[in-house]
Amino acid sequence: LTTGRLTLILAALSWVGCSDPTENPEAKDSEESPDEAVETKYEVEWFTAQGTDSEEHVHEGIETTDGSFIAIGHGLNPDNTDDVLVIKVSSQGSLNWKKSFGISGFKGAGYCIIEVDDGYVLGGALYDSTVERTQRFLAKLSLSGSLMWERYLQSEGIGGIRGIDKTSDGNLVLTGYLNALDLEENRGFIFISEESEGFVIKVDPEGNTIWEESLPVPQGTKVRQIDDGYAIISCSWQTSLAGVENQQFTLIKLDSNGNLVWEKHLGGPGNDHLYDFDVTVDGGFILGGHTLSYGVENWDYLLMRVDRDGNELWHKTFGQPRGYNPQYIHDEAYGVRQTMDGGFIIVGGSGDEHAYSDNSHSAGPSDEWKVYLVKTDSDGKKLWDAVYPEESVGNNAGEYMALTSDSGVIVFVDTDSETPPAPN
Image (cartoon, rainbow, N blue to C red):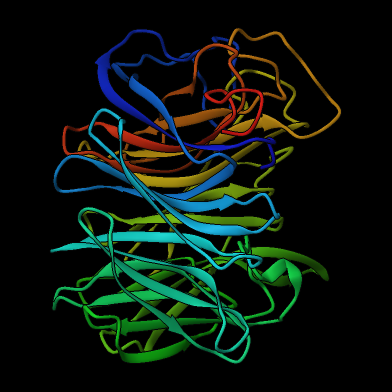
């Protein structure tokens, strides 16, 4: 997604009663009718922008134990380089603190963050002057945002940490990519790392390596501890079906020592990208991303449920929440969670990246990106969908989400609608 000036923004959403099934009664998706009865939906509690004096991009975020929220991403500097950027806001979205990491003249990106007992541990990619290339970067911040320690996990090529989780024994497990080619496009934020090596590392609370294993994929994207080991997703896997090159995604299971138990390459005959997953109450997994497979006309949301052995149970696609021409609309999902009722939420952005332009919906023209949220039942049947904001105020695209302690949802958004004409 490219929308020009972007800022970190957070939207807090909560359940309310509702009889209206969608923001647009003419909207459609790839597999579900929008005209079914709906019991509940989300309304916006608050919508706030935070950032720097330049351009930013958010990658992930969490709710903290004190009811606040933290977003991590990267910020663009005037010299066209990027810093790792971390922002903490209160339960109502007001700024608590922000912290950046970087070296003048070089690019970096923050990909993931997690709360520990006395602070926050973050992972990303940052230039390491001792080896003169971008390396896997790990740092710990205090509860007030002060730097407690930082580590570079060095490799021969360029590397980055994409996913992090806490382990039951008080340590951390990390995944990402290493030994990527030392090219300009690999020196900061890498959307999909293909010519590289995936890894998984277990580290102690001070960031010291306990063990490290390679993965049979170019990168690990997200990692979760499960009851008998770890699960990792890789967003893209290059393959060939009937002589045609395409991208699928991979779900990997490891034992408690990081050894491979199984790997599953999933997806259809077109390109499929996976960016988030959650462990379901039955020990299986719900996967979220977007697809060019399964009969869609352009990128649509892909929601896939698999069992605890990685076998697909079902998949659903969703798109075109404003009813625009599906040939031109990108519906790109980056966050998914199972909800307390056993259903699922998938979130991302919907917009047009083509010369086509339509302005027939009250939420804005087709080339104005919107946060797009879909709620389903436990079988993936759509209960409702909605776009946010509900009026034309500029570009807003969901990049990640988390469930909140008050049964709501926090959405981490890229926006230009909350900024002045110059980058905020």
